[in-house]
Image (cartoon, rainbow, N blue to C red; front, side):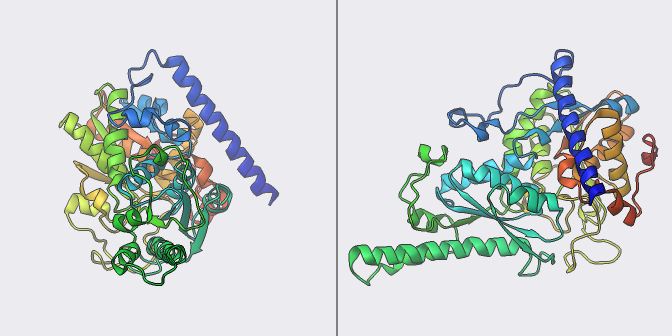
Length: 454
């Protein structure tokens, strides 16, 4: 226990040093680097956003950092979008904002309502942080094999309701995503029942317009919640977190990050434009892994619209089927046919990336190819970046950097390559940065340089 505490403390200290190093780098060298410095907000930053203050206003406009060690080793400019510097600590903050904003505007979510989501960690954290800023609550369903930092130490501390369930296939009715969807429907039914009861009491009659009540119980979509609300979707109340809470339930809304196209739009309207502006349009390639597919879809489509010569690539972890889908057009492995997998998704220590189905978000990505990485490459890369750059990044960020080096090797010196630094290593202490866990899986890092990519 003492050793584990000491290891966690050392990792936390490393994270603090890493963040400080990033800050000093940007302020010291910003004038010399074309991709670092103040940027205007994207087209997304209309008057509606500028009127808001507080946490939501702090999300986005993260710096584009030159990863010195990888750039020097490859002869390319390898830049990382430092999404771990968002208030919620990950790229998912953007998705949480976009999903909640669109749901409030459409009436699918009410002020004071509950946002539900099935998430392995980062999206749950972001929703738990962002929802209160809009006057809403958050209920997350999470598989019980997720890293403990994400469950006990962060999400619950943020005040979200956390429901842990056993990991099963997405096709199973009790997959954590499917349970989250049910929780939103249950919340809407409860809200409808409460309002029906209140209506009866107020009007002194047991007769209620059945057509109206049917619309309230309709499965969690906009018309049901619009029937329940007495405030305009375009009102300022939707954006300042001040809602008229009463004793009635406000219903629920299933965020549905995998299939909700607000995910894609967050990156098409926000992250992509930032990358273009910060790089001054000089980038030659973009590479990233995919889980929901929102980041790679939104960024790739935006960059391709700005310059069709920019190459966009997928970086896929072990066990995921997206590499095959991109390179061969069919998602399968040697062990299974596409769409038939019923067990736990795949065998990798990386979290938040890789999937064995094509989401609506991923469908709109514009990709020129794909790379496949290994767990060992991700582990070694994370230690290399910490040692040489002071960057303490998580497993998906490390895998993205492996992809950036692969692209640099294929394109050759003189190119500019951008990737995403999704979150920090602070959320990966129990597995990815746990020496004993890695040893048990034969993944103890041993490299002294980048020889693991040879």
